[in-house]
Length: 509
Image (cartoon, rainbow, N blue to C red):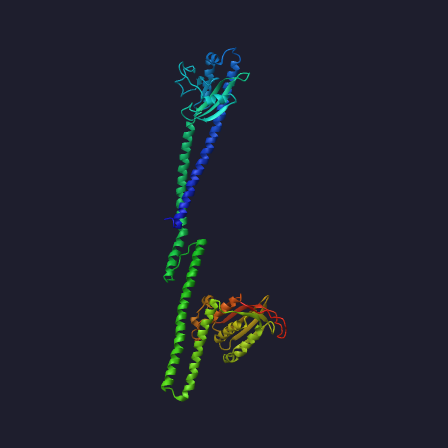
């Protein structure tokens, strides 16, 4: 269940929201509870201080009597004063006890009516006393603030403040305790928690619905790509992912579709290559077999045998060229072909290739130009490999040039690089085919009528060799008008003379 990205995302969202509700509720209730406790503590302390001050002032003028006798004698002025303070704090209860912690007088006592009479004095036969721990603490304290059951004195939690009553000599003769129940705050906090939870749940529901649709929009293309990947594994490369929007997911979907296009194109190119290679292998082999059988059977007159042997030799050369091209590709891909990097004159090589192609150039009446910045320009590369590339590109340029068209080979300086380009006017290459010109096994259908010998390996080999030199090769064209192939090489200094003792810095890749 949790393997799904969608389920994981929604689960994480829900968990974060639940933790947020718990944390926010805890923080808010704690803050409110603390605020209420502080307010009640201050109010109870102020009341206790007022009552204590009144009793001390009144007791000091009562003569030499005990504190208990004072309370019995002064109950009528004290009780109304206690009852008048009841409005300051809700459910306020005031206890006045003697020095031993025995409660003698109660004011505003809704929950202690069974202990006191109408005058507030403890009824005869009733006893109500502070726990010993509280009484002991009062001896060395100016006031005690508590928020509990006061060690069992109350049945429920109360806020309480106990202030000792001291004589002028510092003796504790009694105490005043002001307290109130916590039920009102508990009710408030309960209502607050319910309100927070309900409002948060509604907000979370709304957010969950929004997240559901957002997540579905994010995950849906991924699911589509997963289905498309399974289709690719089954050999169906025509499946595409729908692209919606312009965000990162849309970019991923577009990249996936581009990859699918490349896979489909590569598969189609390989299929065409197999068909082309099969045809190019089968045709000369069938011709060779037929000519040999006719020669052996005597069907071909003896005077015609040399002519047919020449045809057989040509077909064998074609087969050999194809096989060597395939072997060359295999070596390059396996990393078995090593390149002997050393300086040589690229201008000299270009001139040699042009001179070697003189008859073909004249046959098409081409306007030949050779443009170089200097007569001699040296590059650092494998001479044999670069000759293979340049001769192949020049051969293609002648093959696809129009009658009387312009044919140009140029060598130019570009900083630390040397740029070699071959230009021709002729059939050119269609714009939609330009990205695939250097692909393995690619051969333009538009050139089939002109190129009857190649199988689309030359330019792939050229790109592989150039990339092995850490250089670049590109093609530019306007279909039906012109085409230009350009590649770069590392510039080199003129090599030392052959009789120089210094090494020429040969490097093998």
